[in-house]
Length: 99
Image 1 (spheres, rainbow, N blue to C red):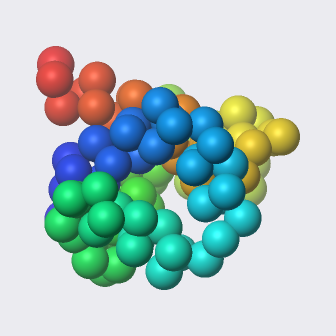
Image 2: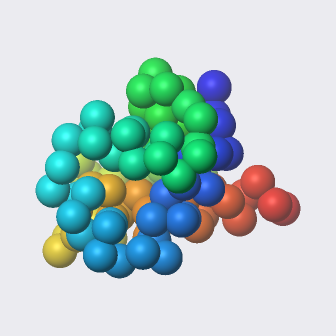
């Protein structure tokens, strides 16, 4: 199940570069704790399913396999995975929800 609140949380983080930088070095548990502190309610299973499901769907839409050869990974260079999700995946996913 894809939960748009996961992307809203990530978009919120993208507006807070210092917290995003710090959380990019922390565990997933710390990231989920921050989401709850900001009022976003979803569990780890939903978080994972939302992110993986969306990345797989984005790869399908660009006609590429979701593996290490996927061109989406190139947009991650120089970023933490969390920063990549917040600044690359989340805006694309939120745009899709609003179209």
